[in-house]
Length: 325
Image 1 (cartoon, rainbow, N blue to C red):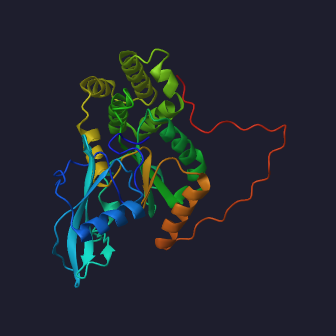
Image 2 (spheres, rainbow, N blue to C red; image 1 turned 30 degrees about the horizontal axis):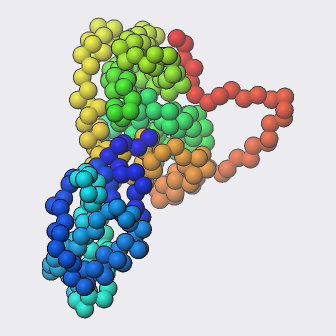
Image 3 (tube, rainbow, N blue to C red; image 1 turned 90 degrees about the vertical axis):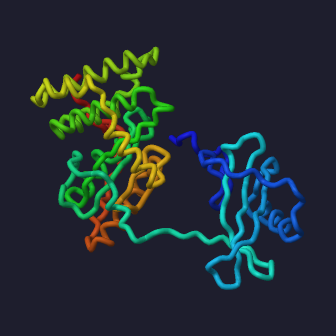
């Protein structure tokens, strides 16, 4: 599910994110002939809705020989949060407009995740790591979770490891942050308890929400489930209870800050050795990402197994864990 920072009906080619900071309002003076040509071209090529204003800024020196830099501001009058300014290149003769994007590749994108001491499923020494930014109340996350476990882990076995980070969409999901805190309380004591708790919430989200969607009742149930799981795994009950009672969300917010820096704005968003995808992904496409990462790491992906179609008399159990209540 996407956070509300993004503008409905985004334009093509890097245009208009609603959560961006407001920029300086366009000047109302009549544009020059060149600026008018630029405006018409941009509106046509990017399919800019007619209600949006397009303002071309002054020409400034660029690092590209034969080109100046200009800024183009897209804005929706009366809605300062629906404004974005982008840099373009304009040739010295005024006949060519170009958009140049630059990215910093000096850092390994897989090296910035705060995954030290996080619970792991799979082989801790695997060369391919799937880092998933998860929301425990998100139905799309539950769908992706059901694909990771057991199907993906069964296919790749010790070739991969899967690690979850927290990104609760609190604007949409009232108990997601509380659940993330409790899950981290369990993770600090026992990784099995953590995964059992995560499995349960991703298969029983409606039970936690309840028919009346009362956040207080949901929080009470989350605490009860966490304490029950702690008892099953023989964790230190005093430490666990103190952590649950404190509800310290600083670790979760630190993980969310990392996600923001990486451009995470939806859940699930996962990275396969730094290769990013947002949203639930069909199994075949997820396999493509993992296979690509394995080859890049010098490993051979497993051979696809041909599965015989089930007969009408066969039944299969739904994916997902079913821990005792």
